[in-house]
Length: 279
Image (cartoon, rainbow, N blue to C red; front, side):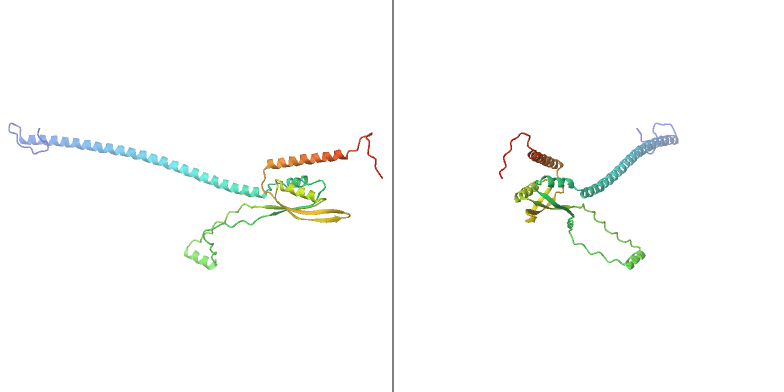
């Protein structure tokens, strides 16, 4: 097979003119060249179309992923806002709970009166509320003294166009803590009554650090009494079930004592012999 792109030479056994043969060869070469060009152009166009379609798909995926990231960012911002609101609400709830007495006054009064012997009286009861100073927060470095502010400095900064430094955030308010101290004064007939009362107060679930301040003898007319003072601290937290059981036991014991006292004070029935009284 002859090369269509090669030089055309005269044919040995051909009677055709050389110009005709040369034109035929050039025509075949042109057709082959155009065919190859069309094939290459079609391949390039196909590659361009495929590349453009893949680029469009990648752009769509990128847009979809960006939308998902934006939605996730909005959800994260909403979650952070909710967490911040929850933290603020918890701080307010802790502050509000700290302002409410954990142990009501009526429970303290019931514990004091129901544990008291029948021959004892209470003269005064004082509950004092104090708020201890909060502990300073530990810092790695010593606090620097605040810079001296002046109007000239602010004016110079405004002229130069320099923004003023922002003040640091204020510290969050700490939850207040309260302690309740109890001072109790009363009068007893016997030292044993006071000793029993002091032991009973030490076992009370609402009191802590029960101590005797003093006890001394006093006279009221012809009778001698024991004047005493007791100091204690009211617990800031207590289990309600423990307090309920303690009050129920004290009420039952006091009811039993009252019933026994009433039974002893009942008059004897008619016809019952009584002992003769010697003069």
